[in-house]
Length: 162
Image: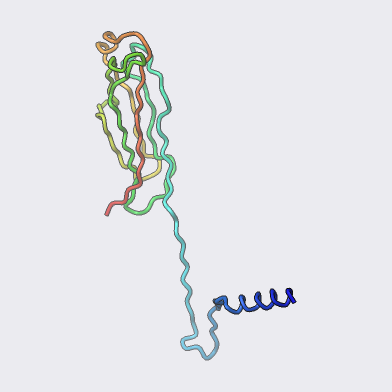
């Protein structure tokens, strides 16, 4: 009896489920005009890869140290879209023992100071800019001995312009 009840409920549940039928177009000698059409669609989501510099050690006394390259290494973007990379720094290497003791530095690209916040929008794969860390002799000479560090932040954002 239990088997009949379960079978009956299963059959009833299947009848209650909505059924959707999909059919191909049929064209016969009676179709006027004797043609049909079908739409083909696809969607490609934007993808990108941005490469940023790795950690770097600046040797004491070096005025200019190559920091690395920011590059759009892979991109499949929409029309009128780009990848915005914003570089932010406070421009100070802080002493590990006393954060009030700093060595000021500037980030440069192609020899020009880019300031504490710099943004560039890449629109195609392969676009890049190089970064260099610049420290003046006077700042090296007035620094206390010890370990210094700073963190540079790279924000990456997909942007669409109108």
